[in-house]
Amino acid sequence: LLGDVEEIDLANRTITSRLMAMETVLPFDSLIVAAGAQQNYFGNDHFATYAPGMKTIDDALELRGRIMGAFEAAEVTTDPAERTRRLTFVVVGGGPTGVELAGQIAELARRTLPGAFRTIDPAECKVMLLDGAPFVLTPMGENLGHKAQRRLEKMGVEVYPNSVVTNVDYMGIVVKDKLTGEERRVDCACKVWSAGVAASPLGKMIADQCEGTEVDRAGRVVVEPDLSVKGHPNAVVVGDMMSVPNVPGVAQGANQGATP
Image 1 (tube, helix red, strand yellow):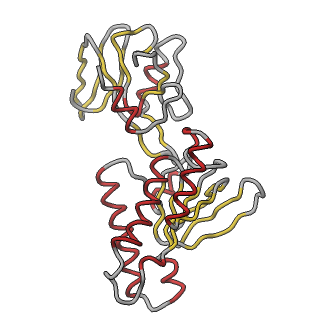
Image 2: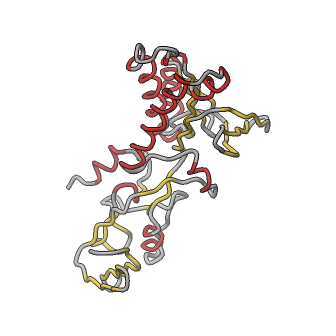
Image 3: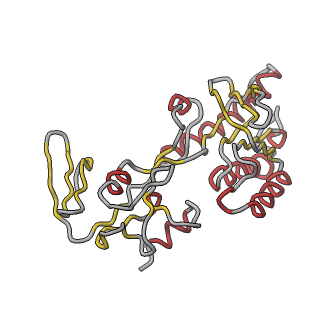
């Protein structure tokens, strides 16, 4: 299938795609939709300039460059305030991605980089994890969430629950406490956004054609136990586009969805 999908017609079992000026209509017997998801900035897409997400290999390379670049810039600056800003890393979003990334930055600073610089000690960096929920890893339950937070804090990560980011710019971020309503500014060079995902628009296109089928708040299709969409057993939604009750949106669930 070439080009961008413009329409999926489940009733007539056809897919319409467009590549430049060429339109293609392709019939199908069985359909597997795995168009994935993208970063969700909840209406603040301009945050992406200063706080990139991590959904593609290009995103990962960009983040690697920003993280290593922050340490390198801290090494050469002579301004103490700027050095502190460069050595402050903020991860927004306490889901599986944010928790793992915050832990990896802390391990990088304390286990991998010591001895690599002359004027700074990477282990003195500050790693902050912000999340709007009362605890991290919310989909996995309060017990595991609190255990994960204690483990992160033991690694040196500062965890701030009930914290919502209201603004992001080159120099730092503005954070609002959900409980008190107070805002404070955090000066930081490296910001990473892992606060949520938005499924491909194809999910809503499919759900609108299936009576009784809905999408969740992230745009994922609520599927049947066999991952098919209601009323269309020949159409299956998998990966980051599917929503299965009590199954968090992590790689393990997506991998098991591909198992016959």
